[in-house]
Image (tube, rainbow, N blue to C red; front, top):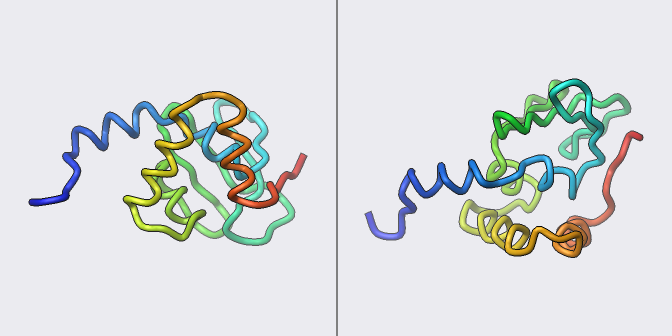
Length: 115
């Protein structure tokens, strides 16, 4: 099928993506055991129910039920399609420097934090 990205390529990109780094540019995260937790960016809350698992490369909010991988997170945050979210990810990982993280943070607006 024309224009379709092979599943092996998607798996490779997903494995290389650091979901904690990407999500952390939008949400204040704090390590709790094996996971990172913070306030969910998809609904208003006072207690952190948003969890990111770096080992599995996923996120989940126990408050609103949102969850998925790095692509799903960027699609929800940017209100964008898959190709757009993957281009945001590529821009963020082109340079794994602090300036790339700051660029993402600026494009996302104010960062919510519970710390």
